[in-house]
Length: 460
Image (cartoon, rainbow, N blue to C red):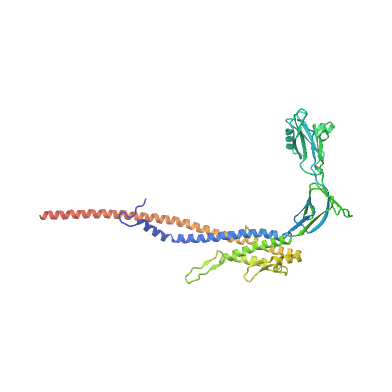
């Protein structure tokens, strides 16, 4: 609770505030300095993040397949082509003789498992066996027990109409989890001992049961009908690396040869290259804009400095990136493939020139671009490495300065709080002293007045 000069008539609160404003000037200057440092640190962190992203892009672009962009084709919708690392242009004819199938059998229709408790033995193509005992005779319980066994067989209870008495029937469908000849299996009624003794019943041979599909590998032929004919198989319908970096997936048998092809996608390569150069240009532009100074148009105006103005680390970064992009590689200038810098240091990319160079000599263009990207990657890592990057160190130094200024401000806050308390006590004491003086003045005035009265009475 504060009451302004009750005795003195002074506006104590305003006086103390004015004095505190003067005392707080150093703290205000520190706050302004810390705000400026925070802005610079924020901009440096943003620049560093962009530089780290550029390093990632450059790493991809500098790899042998950094510009690998292909278009695939197939003369049949039942054959698809996909490319991976290592792919190269090609054209070939294939004949699909077989597609991969999952081994599948269904049991005869019944109202439930005829033996209680059910015991089933599964046997895979390697001769390995798994005995399964079921708590319950329903087809759903049997299917669940087989699935829980984890033997590579998926079981399903399938409705199969009704018997002569109108009771619902079901079949047990057993399907290999994976396609291929190696995933063939057998299912028996009975335990392993019965299977070994030959007394167990093969579910697929019972009346009304059937083998729906025999597990088989996919098969195709290259150069069919020639002396170089080559037969290839796959446990799945995808032939991985049928050609280096080229995967072919089949979905149906083909009586006639299917022509597959892989061609260079020049437009996609040009676009990818342009996007990489655009990422570099974005960083250079960011640095340029942050380094600009605004000069006043009239005398007495204020000059505004950019956040990066005078920052030697950022200036060196800009120079290093520009050099990495524009310097020749083995005597060949990047400008020959459309990457150039004008007299003002502005980076540009000529897509048409790049596409022409790529069409003329794709290997040379890819090599040159890869080398440029490698230099950009090295530069980006030198400056943005999270441990000892030059820009990272600059950010750390800036953050340390901000922290130091914050600590100074905290000490100033303590001093100012103490100064304010001191002023409040001083003015409070002043009011007390004035109050006492005022009381004394009143007392003396009353005494003088009484003495004057007494003198007048005596004279009468």
